[in-house]
Picture 1 (cartoon, helix red, strand yellow):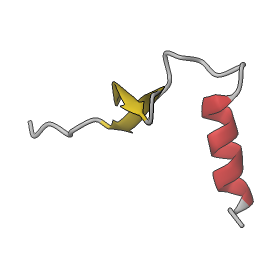
Picture 2 (cartoon, rainbow, N blue to C red):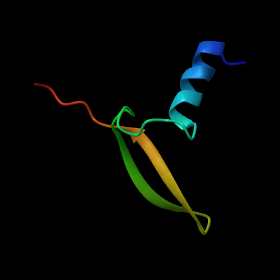
Picture 3 (cartoon, rainbow, N blue to C red):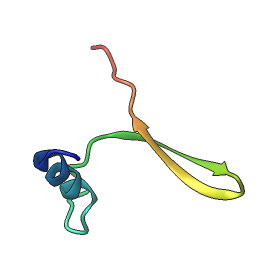
Length: 49
């Protein structure tokens, strides 16, 4: 069972009210899984200043 704060944080990013400008940067790729198109979201690689 996920802690309540984790669930609320997830709902904030996934809900229809989510502000896309505040969303974290992620790497998005489209892939094929057993003939079904899927979108894969991964953490973006961090850059070293």
